[in-house]
Length: 596
Image (cartoon, rainbow, N blue to C red; front, side):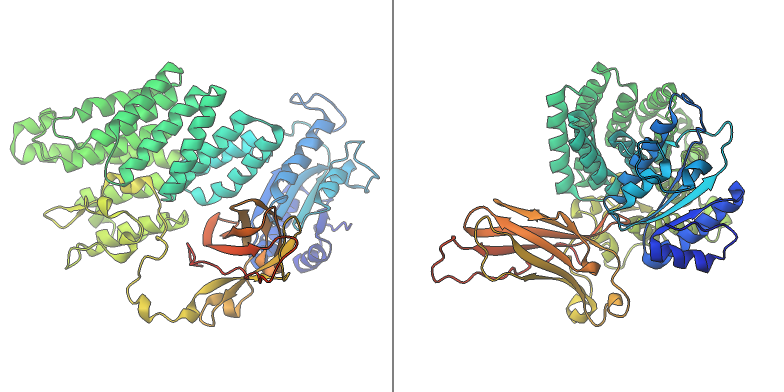
């Protein structure tokens, strides 16, 4: 253990941290200490490619009962929060605000409630870096922030916020930990909500089949525990999946709304009402103006800014796309260009209101789509800002939404000469959805509403232009090696997994990033551990329980974003314990589901 004051230079502190994986900083004002810890964490994280988690600790001093929590309980909460962070993946953990008395020495145990001792104990088996900031006791310090709680429900809340913002990359790791936390606690209700949010995340990322399977599982689990609001949310998400294929299911959304209302879930009913209205908004004669107004009132009642923002967005979109012949717009009844101009001004006001609310709610996904549609429908607004496309593309890029960037590219380039959608859209969206893409007489795209419901990744194996001429050396492959000659039932056999970049791949000249390889048995066998790190030499123990052919699945992910880079399946022949003249086959990866 090492104590390093804030006056030491950054390089020395960084070397100390890399040697010990523990750095305790004390004897400095709050601002100086926090800035120093942040600088060290950022430097280590950037070089190692690790995420950073920061906790601000309440200083309970010698008193008890502050904010309903004793010093020992506060210390336990911090330790459990940190344990939840670095138990799964290596990372940099910054714990600031530790009382000075807890950082004077390493106690022999944790019974005295020493926070530092508890952190060191939890950290003992971790590969993460721990930075601790020690402070003097003060009155009025706040309790742990809401994101410091490591229980399953807190993890679910954080994951849901990321999904609401349109940044599902950060939700994946949180949801995996939430599922584990609820399973360990035996909380079936919490586990059902975790599975539901996992399905929602998959829908956002365009993984339709996986989302459908998880949402069906979640709905059945909600029914089993009598969680009617959850059942309604799952039904609504399943109905939204249908919109991606170009076939909205308003009846299912209406049923979800009725379930929400029976359960007294006003917020859920408002969202189901919105998506039901959106699914029918383009039907001839549908009273969309009245329905959007009703939905907006519902969201105001429950103080849901995000729901109000999406309502204004779709209301404005409908106004901008109708031609005044729907029979529900009195302003257009005056005829001529006056009605059209009034519609455009009203749509502009709604887009501006939506944009302001998306910014207040910190939802870059909604903000980017509103900026795009506003620019397309309001030429004056676009021409005032010559960098409109670059600005919108930048917002999409900030949340990793390459599909959104592709729509901006299309809007900027106009229709293709052959009428076919560009590759970056064709490889991400179903043909049925892209068939609904239209164009105005001015050459502006009428982007399908459902396009903003997902951020789909390229479909595996979708032919890229010129793919036949692409050298195989520019790809990275997964290599599986069976290290034991003859696998037999109930005896562990070792399997090594490597990520092998071709000579033209960027990883061929740089260290392999800290990827995670997840192993799953698809038959009567066990595989341990569940996760491995290819950069460190991932090795798994495969224990079959019967002879015959066994299938295994290995999924390589980027743990910082939850992105699946490649997925392979392997078959291994297992011979009986008294084998005859039989030779097992080494695991041969099937064609990858995704390419790194």
